[in-house]
Length: 384
Image (cartoon, rainbow, N blue to C red; front, side):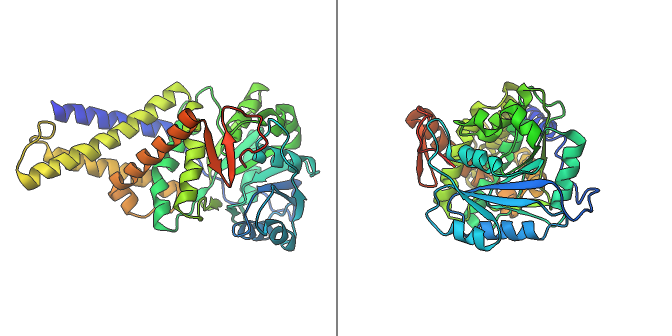
C-alpha cells in the first residue's frame, strides 16, 4: 500500500511541475534586429555594486544593437559604485533619501526613468550581464507581446555555498505560474530585467504604483494587469545571466530571507498547492530513502519502508532526474545539487524557516545594510 501511495504522489508531483513549467521560454537569440542602435534607455538601480556593475556596463557596450543611454542611479552606495560606473561611461544619478512610503529600489527606478528620454525603458539589476545579441531578443519579445517583458536571468553559480540556493531558484519559477500551461489570473514578473515602453510604464503608474512594496516586480506586473496591459516572462538562457550572491553565505541568506516568504504570500492558490505538492514529494523521498538505507544497513525494519528499498531507490532517481532537467535550464548548478538533493533541500528548509520568522514574526528583514520594517512601510530606511 505504501508503494502505491508513493507512486501516486510522485506522479502527481511530476505532473504538477510539468504543468507549472509547460512554457518555460527563453529569450530568443538576436531576434530580427540588426540596427546599430535602438530607442532604449537603460536604468540600473545600484547600491554597493562596485564589484558587479563593471561586467554589466561592459556587456552593454558590446551589444550588437546599442542603447541610447545608460543611467546608473546610485542609491547611497558605501563603496565606489558611482565612480566605477562613471568611468565606464554611464551617467550617474545620485538618489536622494527615499520619501516616506518608498522602498529604495522603487525610488531609484522612478528617478532613473524620469531622467531618461527614449521610448523604451530597460531596467536591469547591477548583477546582470547581457550577451551581445540579448537586446535584439528582448526587443523581439516586446514587439510581439507588448506591455511588460520580464526575464529571470540564468543563474551563474560559482562557489559551493551558492549551490544551496537551487531549490529557491526552482520554487521561484514554479510558484510564479508564469510559465504554466494555463497561466493563473495573477501576473508575475522578475525584477532583474524588465523591458517596457515608456507609454505603457506611465499608463500602469510606473514605480510610483509600487512605491512601498518589497516585491516591487510582482506588484508592478499587477499594476500592468490592472490597466489591461500584458506581462510576458522568460528565462535568460544564454542571453541574460546573473550571479546574485557573490558576497558570501550571509548575503545569500539575507537575500532569500527578504524575498521568499513574502513571495509565498503573493502566489495564487493553485500554483502554491502544486508547488507544495512537488516539495512534499521531495521531502518524502529524502526521508523514506534515508530510512530504507538504515534498514538495509542495520537490518532493522521501519514500517514505513519495510520491503520498499528498491522502490525508494527508483523514487530517488526519478526525483533527482527531474530536478536535474529543471536546474540545467535555469542555472549552472553542479551535479550534486540534484544527485544529492536532500543536502540542498535541508538548506531550503532552514532558509525558508528563517524567512518566515523574519517576515511573519519579527516583521522586518535586513538587506544591504538597511532594516526593512514590514509593519511600517513608510520608513525611509527601506530595501533596494
